[in-house]
Length: 556
Image 1 (cartoon, helix red, strand yellow):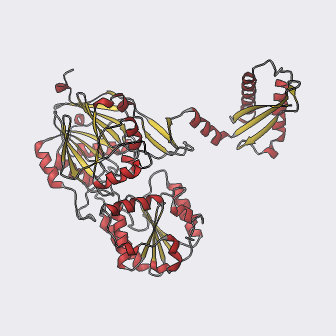
Image 2 (cartoon, rainbow, N blue to C red; image 1 turned 180 degrees about the vertical axis):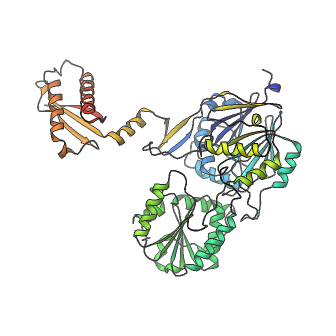
Image 3 (tube, one colour; image 1 turned 90 degrees about the vertical axis):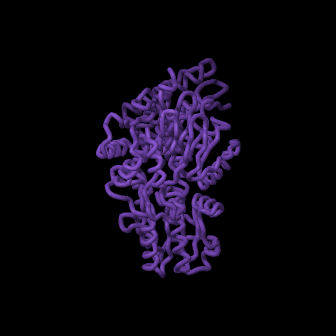
């Protein structure tokens, strides 16, 4: 097939039908670009799993075609899987903004075998990779250094927003470059892919400066209290406002939480975060200051188990004990799925006497994603011929496609992608054109494994059904039983309430193996027989399927 008539192909390995794990692939002929490489966090049915990343099979199979990896910004759902991708694609260049590069470099320190020096690019800069010409366009988001991509292809201009909002009064004074968007529109935009996270929310998102005003008022209202603020460590603009307010009211700042310390230090080094170093107090010196002199900035806004705020709430954080004179601010939104953990932390803080404020009580957080009216503005400026919504669950993608239709776009010019879909775009058409390998991989410590592997299935079974260890002890002199089999259970039944059941199970195993010649018979076959017998017994009697571990112990 002639590549001049085949058009460009866009494949989705993440970020559609879900929030997080963003990864797209742009192709023309035998040349490919990767856009973002993000992760997601494990759900409750993934015990022991640390991270969830995209399946890179398609990229590994086409590694010689990949000209570069383009990163829109430094959030984990856009850079978190990059070290694992670079393990598979050594030597492929990475391009990102100054702060994003710094965050990637921090991440790569934990993966020392990877030799990669990301390339720093600036808004307004254009680079050439194969047949693609990529211009990086300034956008506003909840992290510094966010950029959209205007990619000129042999077929036409493809524009990808990355995560964005329209904040006309951003903290750094550098608003989204709408003028440049209008100039790009004059050339004609063939295809638009855009952030759909808040496509269901009417109106305009609030400016980040509004949060600063709210926080300022809360500092004034709580002058005698110790103020503790939990927020996303990556929200450098939020942190900058907090630091400014602390300096304004003469409060010292204490940073707690590993990610908070790392990101603030990184942002300060490259000039993205500016503050008087004399404001910062080491946590070991906290006793030298009165409550009214302190503001503690910490991680834990999502109730994460080992975060600084959660440990404070549990009374497990050295040097900081929550009490009646603490005023705790959750300067964050609730990420779906974290409601229970956050509520638990809030309740624990209340029981310790603290006052707590969060998004539903005051304007202490704004979203970094565009609302409906902002999305309409984007579409109206760019006027794309074809549109593919991305970055969101299916309901978000559907809502965003409806916005495009309300603005006059023909339904046949809009395609809503599923995970693994490939969409073909020519100068005159757009359609789904097949699928590529997709799915998830699970990061367990240093290992990356298949989703639903044996280990993961066993963990789920252990968590839900419990475990039984069956011990059969034999004499190596007579090759026969020395005693009745023993059963030890963990997470399966309350032993004292089920003594008769367990005795019956022991008798069943005794009758099964009492005449066995352990010298001549295969021990693995004996163990499998014990396992199958007990599985059937427990399911019949209790409708339970514990993990059965048979052991044969040899004694003299």
